[in-house]
Image 1: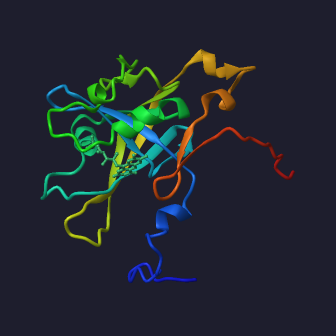
Image 2: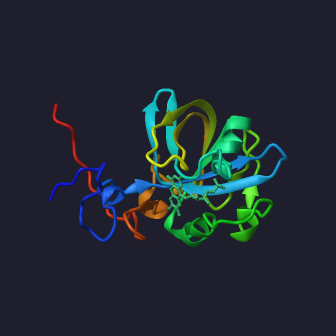
Image 3: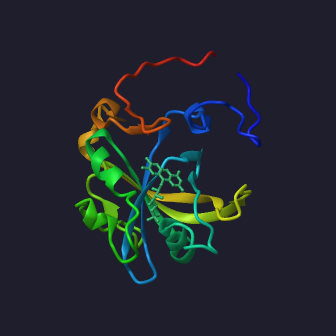
Length: 205
Ligand SMILES: Cc1cc2nc3c(=O)[nH]c(=O)nc-3n(C[C@H](O)[C@H](O)[C@H](O)COP(=O)(O)O)c2cc1C
């Protein structure tokens, strides 16, 4: 089958686009508001985009600033210019899922999901204790994206990673023990996967 994205004439039960880009890692992002409130939410339009210096990106989709404002994560980063990417794992999947609940403003996802935080090394937003990897990021650039629906706002947030905490328990023989880490991945629809099947390939010389 082939469909034109502008027409969405795929004839399927659900729009297949997100299911064509899988698995996606999940950035479980912590930020701080101007009033000093801690915020936490998952973002799977996320990836690393450079390694020296290490850079990451994630994308905000959803309500336009003219409606009830963009998401708190976006607003906090725009104001405070800092965020932590906490890596989401199979162990923390239920708590991760709870933090995308549409709570009313003033309610904390961190409390709602019974998450514990710890001070980050270089930046104000806290890191999540349950995440074996926490990447402390400073905002590099926000890139506005086009939007089909004028009530929505799409943007890419690019950050420079200035410090990475890796729980020593997840390092074995000098490398990250992925089988123990079991990073969580977003698939399409309501589906997820956890990485526990690994093979290696040498690059051609
Ligand atoms: C696994 C998962 C991945 C998500 N990925 C994104 C994403 O990439 N971009 C986005 O705008 N929302 C994404 N969401 C929805 C946000 O997490 C949700 O809108 C959340 O309430 C935003 O919280 P905030 O306002 O505190 O930032 C995702 C939700 C889940 C559960």
